[in-house]
Length: 251
Image 1 (spheres, rainbow, N blue to C red):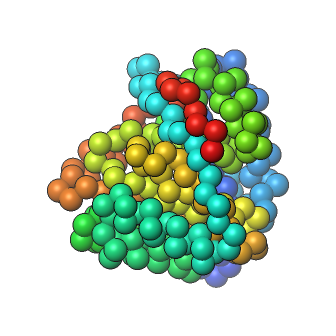
Image 2 (cartoon, one colour):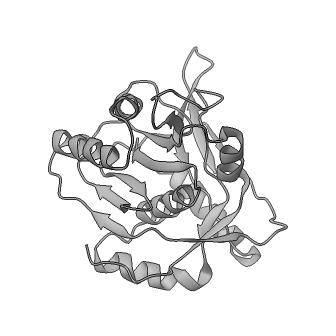
Image 3 (spheres, one colour):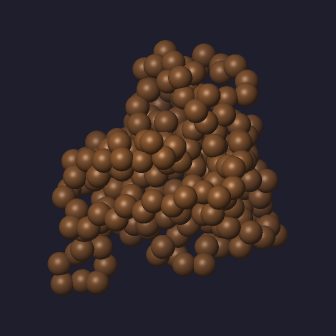
């Protein structure tokens, strides 16, 4: 589902809401209705266009591991963004690449998808810098849904936002050419972002921005020399289901 609103007297539009999942045929009606309700009640405002696309999968989705979930102790945007920077540097992302990612997250220009940045040179790699790259065709394996809900409930974070972000981050981290991901929601009433990578897990970082701010974005850090086209094909077209393979740490 994608919901947007056109900007008056301009060809551009404002992104309002986006969501997707992989579900069984019997759940299509309920799932689509839930996505439409989300678009119509989103804090970013009323959309003038909602697009719902339903596609049948003809191949079994790839099973990928869920990233371990952790939460940092950050009390304000300055502390949170410093945590992001320090974590990225530990993951072998260059300072230039990390700083360029911060500009994407905090800039006025909002992309529809994610930016791709070379982890060494800091250069942007996505073919369309306005559209970006949209991670698609992802969901949670049916056998993992109850365990996931219990695990997140114990931490007080069993929300749709967290479940969807964790699923997306796990798909991204499963690709060998991606070193790390950083994300800050553009929702004005959600201030927690994250850094994700196989070695740090899904690291939630509270207070990345002030309440009411519509700034936000998503950046993938690519290994130097990686095949950008093949990586985008995986992110946008390869169907995956997240499963829980290891016990989750209580952090």
